[in-house]
Image (tube, rainbow, N blue to C red):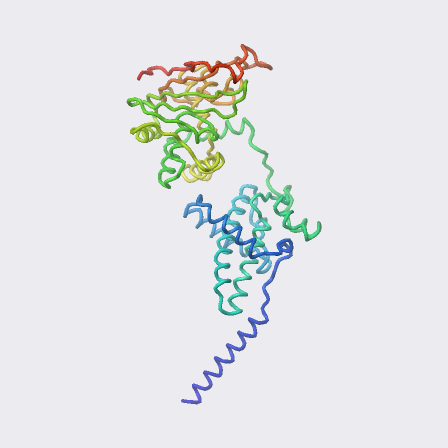
Length: 413
């Protein structure tokens, strides 16, 4: 019995000794990409601190990122080297989605590894944590936030300065020619996407409900954009008032100069078929509401994009603020609005630019009942090569009273 116990103890001691020797022999692998980062731990901490401030990702998105990252882990040549997104991504859009997943997961892993590294009470645990730190850093350097398929980003080049051109070039993504080419969407593409989304029954309600379901900070902003077609850059400074059962929404304009745009436009809305109208009536029941945001217009646009994908499906075109503007123009044309009225509603001071928005056949007659006031008169430029009509007064001149430019059939307060 004693002999058996002694043999077991000796065997365990032998295993522990082997593990100790293996641990001592193990040396964390550091990718050549990290030669430009002399103080890796400090750099990672800075990256993680910035990452922790970002609260924009939902639990569903985080779970999806983690799943993608686990799949991409199989593309690593060895621990310490970055994943190879190009082996899995066949299109640019997939590349960008995988880039976001890789960066989020790398930062989460780095945060955990930094804690483990500091709390480790033995050399083996410390080395193991450090290897995770090295691997996470390699992913972040290989795929910075501005990484493009086929092109070394500015962030990558800065981090790889110490490597030399040959190494840097060998580490970038595969040539863009191997990806499906897709240029930036033109005006016709935007119109096509807008028309496609408008054919989805109840699209506005679906997107708005999705924003409500996830308790998005952009619910009010999306409601204003849906009702008025205002630009993403304008929603964060809008004033909302309730008069009886009507809404008065005042929009300080973006893209305004001495001769372009509408500095102020005002919508008085008596009726709208979408859920956003009832929501804002409730919001403004106790007094005026002035929207604000610490985020940027791009953050609002990203929220719309996510809500669109989740509510309408992956096959639907990307949801943007342009879709709301297009829908407003369509409904106004269906109600017989002229070019001046539509231009003013969209924040333009000339008629030519409104031609890129909306068709009467895509609108719903009577869906919106409202009155629009704009600060500047509209210049007739549609179909001409130059601006015509009277000059707009310079900005230092007395501001004219708002001009009623459109009233829907049946409008009354």
